[in-house]
Image (cartoon, rainbow, N blue to C red):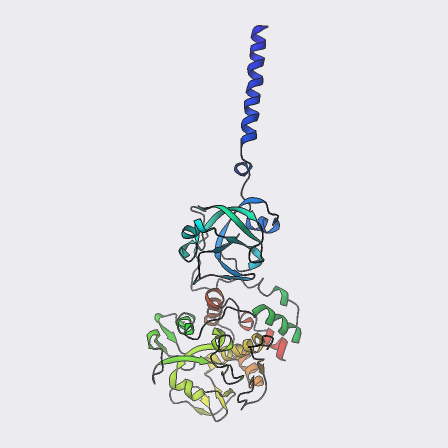
Length: 384
């Protein structure tokens, strides 16, 4: 009986010790970290660990930048390293003691890496977020393969989801709402941006000039006769916006061109016919219009379609730009000739270089897209 009692006592004490150990084990150690999608669904002020890919830095409710980070204060996580839809991201407020280690201005190489962030699930930038962060750790060996920079990599299905099934003015309005409020560049910043958006794929030291098609050294930008400069395809006098941030610096219609060719084109509307330009062969002009070479006719048309949708005058300092079927539009906020632009859009379909340019502007600079490069069929839905 003594032996039985002693064994029973020892067994009970073992159970008590086991229960005590279990009760002292932190819940956070026992529970797995949440995915980003789970964190988005549980903005309930609970303290959780969330694991995801670093996809950029949030600067507003629906804006996440992927380069030229302004500070080390925040980062965005997603379940995919290539995610571009901010609705599928969680925004992280980085505490001051972790900014030098995990801030993107200091460590841009963190983009594409997996982090586990522990903090309170609560909105940040009026967006699902993580604040009061207590720890951030890296996940080794788990990043996605680096995408091929020569291929378009930006998924667009979600970007245009609210435009699906719409036509006419309803579609035009919805596309405006999607591409509105882009990140604006200064006019001086356009120089460097064009060196990337219009880089010659066969020579990384050069850009391709829009009207001549000539490959020219990036370093020769300026005002000299044979330099290249910044051409406003939607002539900046058509609406009198000049080089103001917004329409005057919008990369979707700014292209590198030969200085003297740019001067000849001036603020002419677009139409067929005229005299061939002596330097920009296969481009034609007369007193009221300019006809670009065949290889970029569609590019020009789609740039003007973009401008007519992006700028609707709904912001006090932005013009209401519209296409019409006329030339000699002068300083009125109109550009033509619409019937010809529709022909050019069909004649010269979207190519890979145009798609690549659209991707770069979206991912690296303005964070908006030209819908008529992604969906050229929408041109006829709106203007025919």
